[in-house]
Length: 432
View 1 (cartoon, helix red, strand yellow):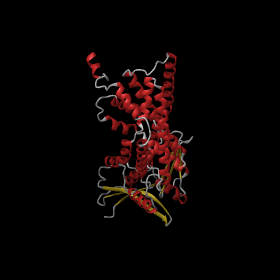
View 2: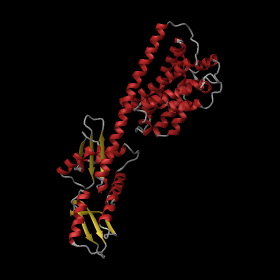
View 3: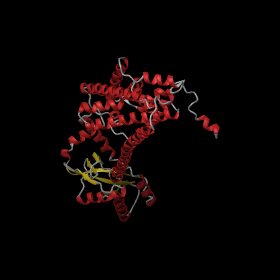
View 4: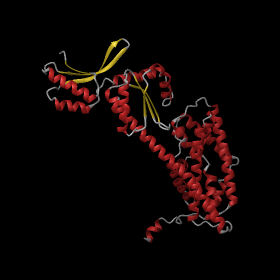
């Protein structure tokens, strides 16, 4: 057992404590070259977020010197060097202010202000960000205290991701979105705090000497403060992680509802919007040519319970004349380049897919109940009542050489109507 413990002994390969502290202190200050490097890294990260390039963002994180004052604060807490703590805090404040200013100016001047996925990913922190910051910080400080620094340092710079949240906060200020700014600053604060805490723990574990004597009352006060800060950071993060999980479940359940109740029946969906964070959850839908009666909508509302969507309101928008703007707005969220031509193409694709009968279970049941019916074809057909009025009908055609009584055909037609929950079903013999 003792031999196994020795494998995890952090004192093996440890550098001299004085050299480590000297190295940490030298990386705290933001003067001259360090400040220029930081400003350039912020511009590079902002460009990467602006064009949605992960590679460019990673490059910016690799050259960023932001870790210095955060690690310095952790060492200061671990060694009770309050002068070092003040210096670290002051330089971190300077670095943060400069980073926000540079990113704010970049996004203010940039002609491209769409919120890309890389930007949006930094606006909603959760418990996983806490874990990444904490364990990334552990790796970083362990590497700093080694004689051979090795490869972990660049990896820690990427994993802890201090630059992107700051740039996102600057973006939020530039476009006047305080929600983006608040979420990004909170993520940045989480990263800074837990890197600092992990550094503090390793410094205590490696038994770095105290700079000066501190009475036990003051030491207890510091411990209580750190514990309180951890709780303050963890509780909102757990709540955010839980909320994110619930939202993902809601989206999955909505997708299952739409797939089973509409897509599998050949209805062409042209508009979909969900409201999860409202007091009453809502699903808004609109279809290309299907019109639902009040009884059908009530039936669909009742079926939401079977998809664990109790308390969700279903809204089917049937006046498509006012949907054009909403459709454009929804598509703009997912695409940089959107036009009416793109919408027309997508609608045509959806319409063509509507003529394909996708319910394989129903086809298997037809084959089992009516083995003599094969070969047969089944699909959707548009029936025009007037040039401006139409509806979809499921049509099953069986081979012209087969002879089935009217009773058998009626029975199959009735069964399909019940199975597909549709009154528009036609079973007939093919002409050839």
